[in-house]
Length: 208
Image (spheres, rainbow, N blue to C red):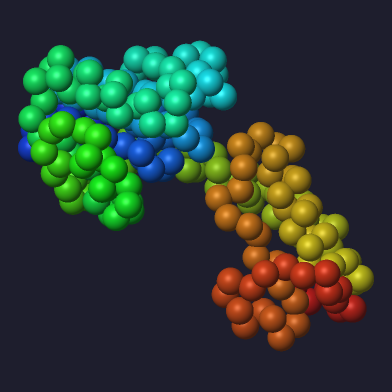
């Protein structure tokens, strides 16, 4: 997977782009983390992350230089150093994700003019590459296999939470990294709720 290169090649309107959302960071690097900052320019790519992730990130990321952040706000100086070296004057940011407070900090700390990316990354993500299509298909097949198994063990008296737990356990056991959202397992009159939350209630007739 080389989405970093894909983003670089698409940087025609922008000189560089800053990614701080977990979804877009992972899209770019393939590495999941709760913290971190990705800077991609036409010439280079950098992933700034703290000590909790540094070892794993260096082992997993090949398309960007992984740099250690020792303080929560040190990445601003590290990003500025790259921007200054490459003479970046305009920097795109995730306008649909960055909060007002975060934008104020970025404007204060970073030197270039900030430009809204206006769906630039979403447009790239919407066109799936072959490996992404294969991953989607594999995830669907795994989910189908787990559902078939759970349908075979559901019985009267099981609670909604027990069935949900079986679904999650089954997916993890077969190799899933995680679930994209909590399973919706509801019974009886609750089945009218498209996003019902599993509870400890049980069904006498197993009408899930």
